[in-house]
Length: 148
Image (tube, rainbow, N blue to C red; front, side, top):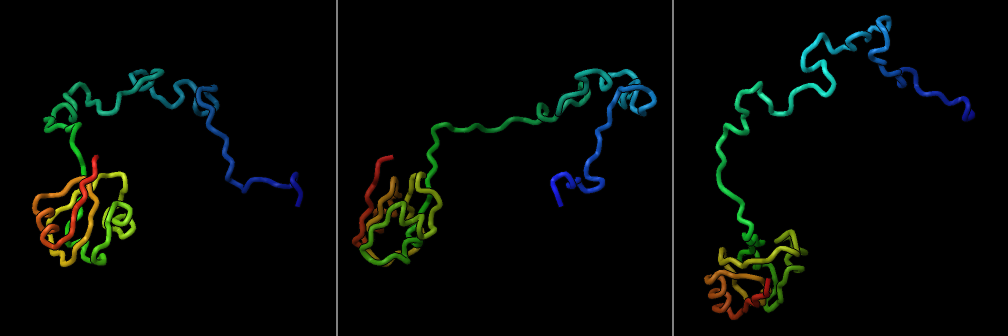
């Protein structure tokens, strides 16, 4: 086999229909657009969501709520999630991502008091609930609040 012997598979190469190139082509005169009307004209046709002059659905439905631009989203960590760690260990974002408790390092962490923790730990987080701080102090652990 040589380069000049190579040919595409039969039926894989198809010539495009040349519209508007004479009556005998089968696509002449109106070129498959029918007679007159908006859809036959150059650039014709209606936009997405146009309902023939009727008030479109996206304008009929009411708008609700708003997006708070100042909202802070935290990766939430419960005390029960920290139970597998060894006593007196230091837990920060990298450790939590490595253990699969949170997904992103760049998102701030908030410690919550849900669940039971039985050993003292040092947790580095950007925020913590009052109950979580109280439980950690009771166990002899500590929470270091990092700045955002």
